[in-house]
Length: 183
Image (cartoon, rainbow, N blue to C red; front, side, top):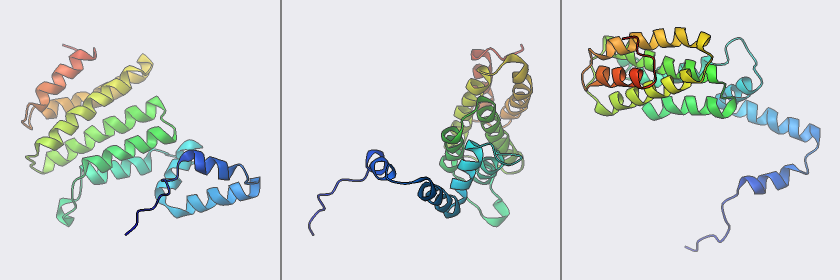
């Protein structure tokens, strides 16, 4: 079988084609992209601040993948949950939204671990990394916006001491490192 000599299309290739679109054709393209997937809809809603809660689809995805319905035999996927945060960052990436999604991720993990025993080092490591991402997101916010997020992470950290794998100790260290340790 002969290998194709054509290179993979790039953004530059697409951009050259889009230059020829008039306003109507461009709107039609965006409409088709909107209709093509829920992910595109969430992206556009976030980008243009449409709807009451632009974070809801991202939270739904996070919760589905880090706190699945074990009675329905749903699996866990840290990568898919993290992708929701990455998708939000690409769509709009507002600091308050990033703080909310990263803290929510940690809380969703806490919910799963509260009712379901789990012995998965990778899951715990991902939780600690997201806990740090949450602290980074909170640190860039104005101080008056930080308190609620820090309080929510305090609850996660407190529960973290019940899970093993050194999760609570790692969270203690991170809280101190980012200057949010009240002790």
